[in-house]
Image 1 (tube, rainbow, N blue to C red):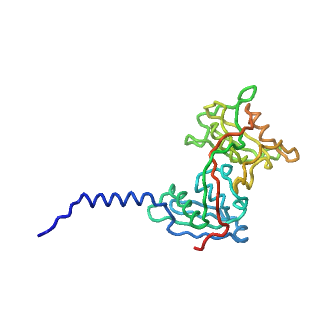
Image 2 (image 1 turned 60 degrees about the vertical axis):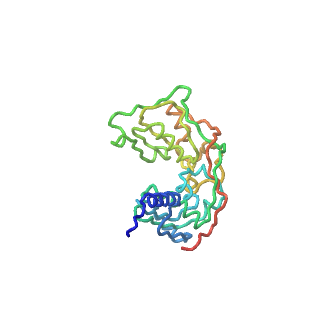
Image 3 (image 1 turned 90 degrees about the vertical axis):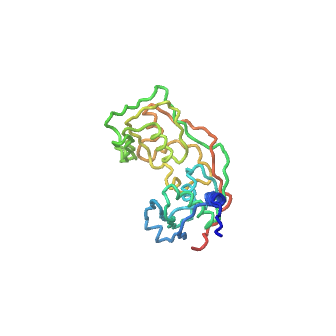
Length: 271
C-alpha cells in the first residue's frame, strides 16, 4: 500500500524555514579586512561600490560605520581613534546581492571583524538653520534649460577671482543648498527658508571653513559652532556669500538621532 504524505505540513515547514532565514543577518561571501600600510595610504586609490562588491581603500572605521548605518559623520559619537586608524577592505556578496544590500552586510562585517557594538540615542547637537535675511532672498529663478538636463541640479566647482573656492549651482533647490552646506561644513544644515523653487546661484567659501578631512574621518564629538571667518586666507567667507544670496545661517542646537559606538577593536580579526 502506498502512503500519501499530506502536503500542508510540508508547506508550513517550508514557510517557517523561509521566515527563519529572513531574520538572519546578511553577510559577504568573501571579505578581506586589513590595516592600511603607508604605501597604500600614499597610493590614494579611490574607494568604489558596485552591485555586489565594494572596495574601501585607506578608510577609517568611522567612514565604514557611516556607510553601514547611513549616518552622517556628525551623527556618530565614539573614540577618537575611529577616525585615525586606516584600513583596506574588499568584500563581495553572494549571488543575487543588490547594491542596497551592501550596507547591511557591512554592519555584519564590522560586528564580526571589529566586534563593533553600538546603540542609538537622541542628543542635542550644534546645527545651522538656513533662513531668509532681513531684506529677503535674492536668488535668481532657474530657467527651463537650467540644471543637469534630467530634472536635477548641475553642481560645479572652480576657483573664484579672489583666490578662494567657488561652487556654481544651476537649477538647484534649497535641498541642494543645505545638503551641499552640510557636506562642506561637516554639521547639519536645516532649511527654514520656505523656498520651493529652483535657482541658479554661486557660493564662495574659503578652504579653512570646510570640514576637510574630518568630513570623511568623522567627529569624536559634535563640532562646535562655526568660528568667525579667518581673514588671512584669500576668498569670501561662506557666511558672507550666503548673505549675498539674501539668506543667513543661524546657529542652534537641534535634537537628532545619534549612533553611539560602545565598543570596537583597532585590530580586525584574521581573514
